[in-house]
Length: 282
Ligand code: C5P
Image (tube, rainbow, N blue to C red; front, side):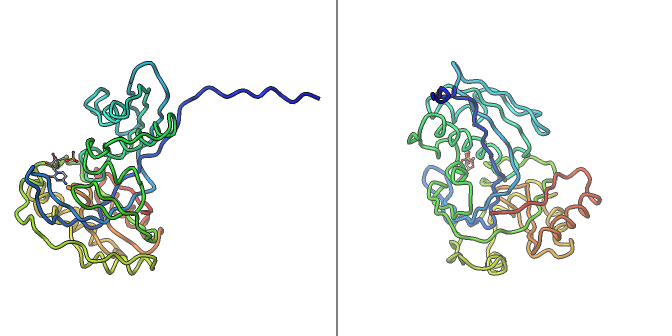
């Protein structure tokens, strides 16, 4: 008896996740002659982020939807579009925006990385210079715990336990170039060795000894960040609070998911206009 006729299904769209990126520590260790800063950062990714779909098309297009779609460009100003151009294949992109922009959690970079990863799955992997899209794009292509160095091009995967966190953004845009411009000390110590394969408490104790060197210049540009950190430090069970990237998003770490959810709901009643999410970092 003949079996059913098998045919290759037409290539349809591919759905890709673009998680929020969190810099748990970010040391600025120098500055290159072209002005870019040398960084040494421990980066992890949230279980929360934007969602994209990419589908083969005659020409590139971008539709943006979702709760934080307002104001997001739908043309070549958007890093997603530039990622498709860099890859060299026209593609129809749908971006479901959940992450605040210019927020220090890599929204645009993670979207661009997701487009590149989606195109790899559609067309096969191509060597592209992801760094050309932004310093955070290489680490966002990995999408899991990593040490990021150089200006962002050196990415080393790390074996770290999951951490429970609350992310908070007070709704102010902090432009990254402005924060770097106001950084006074540009030659700070690098990160010491990162404890791998251990318990969450080992990582949190280690993090407590580290810094985000962009915190002070970001607070100078947007003083509300200092209020966010104070509010996070006042929450029950908080282990550590710090700013991510160039701000204004800050994070707080907790031992358990329940503690993180409880803290987020307390803060939501205190500050109903702030964006916040309890999340797991990995
Ligand atoms: O790479 P990205 O587009 O995120 O960088 C935005 C700006 O942040 C750059 O134009 C530069 O002013 C600053 N920057 C830097 N050193 C880095 C990354 C970014 O000075 N390693």
